[in-house]
Image (cartoon, rainbow, N blue to C red; front, top):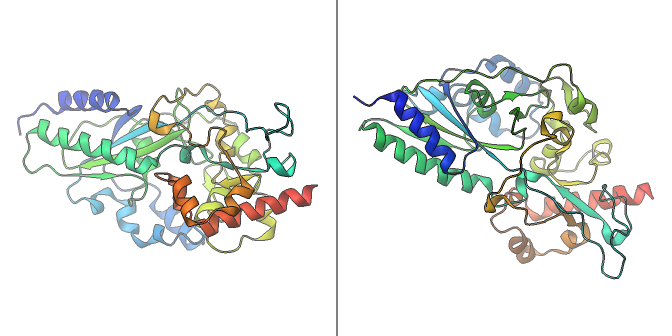
Length: 337
């Protein structure tokens, strides 16, 4: 192959930015440095009911097991930090009446559950995948290598994507286990292209969390058991999305108003104080305040659920689980009265 791989990489990165990605970097397709820690974490049960994390362990911890002959992983990120409005005011009340920064602190007519920002727009899996496939197709064509292979991945694929993104220099994995970029913050969804093309790699970014522990201090359930360590069984995102059964009372009463997911450890992160807003139409909130009326959720039938959440990542949670969460939040509010 006579292609200038350095120029191909420059062109690839420029094309990625023009196609809506905000960050791009290239990591070596080498095995995970955290393989042993991940194995212990799984064996200790900290993944909770997410058994799929262990089902493809070898592929998840070594990109070359996912794509034979892989040389590098192109890591890409999109900023999803969309602006949010104040929660709506109930008809017949003056502006602001009964409205609080805590959706559960107002009267019954205003009880609303919070939704994690990443799920407020269209499903990012579909958005990223289409862009990844376009970029991969262009790269193979531009490389002029008839045997070059690629595989595109979003977070449902067996890859340690945050570790790879950190290796690629598009951020560092913070104490809250989120990827953080000094200019963009941590409001990032990730995607990858694994390829057999030996593109030049980028250098990792320095960890700049320093002595800050705001994320650990703010977590209501103590899911961040130590810097860089997460017990998923206590995480509000896990409990409201992945966990299908009953939620233990001591954890249920600490959901802090979250109906789907949780952003607390990102909301308090200093690197998000000046995070830029996304202008991508697909990522603008379908629920402008980032909240949903809990009584409305409880009243939904299957058709209401499908219509309200069409093309939404919130459909990761089936209606019975979403209604379980809503009922817990209403019960928590009743206890606080």
